[in-house]
Length: 107
Image (cartoon, rainbow, N blue to C red; front, side):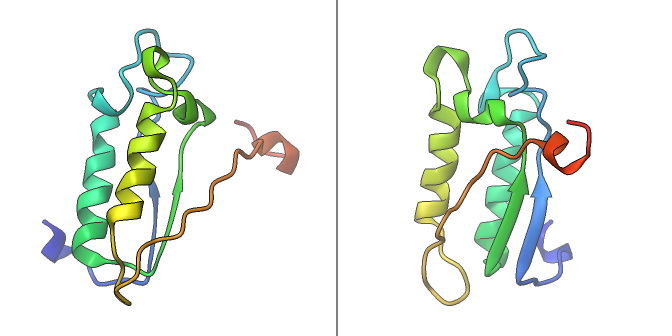
């Protein structure tokens, strides 16, 4: 219940990568069993309207699903375009693919 979540300026999180990962066969992306958890983040952002949001996932998210490359990431970007935060303005989105090995960490 979003009422149980305290108000906040920064939302940090992620959602399971299995439905986006190249390690999964027939990964269903945003429509998969775990991929749909994106919509929970969307719901919380709509309710709490944090000023900042930092999310992480696998680089395969950019190409998901295989049958419609980039569709899922495009849906997520459209959600942010349509959302407003507490100051009444929409969200500006920046994204990067970061190789954890460049920072001495495993994938």
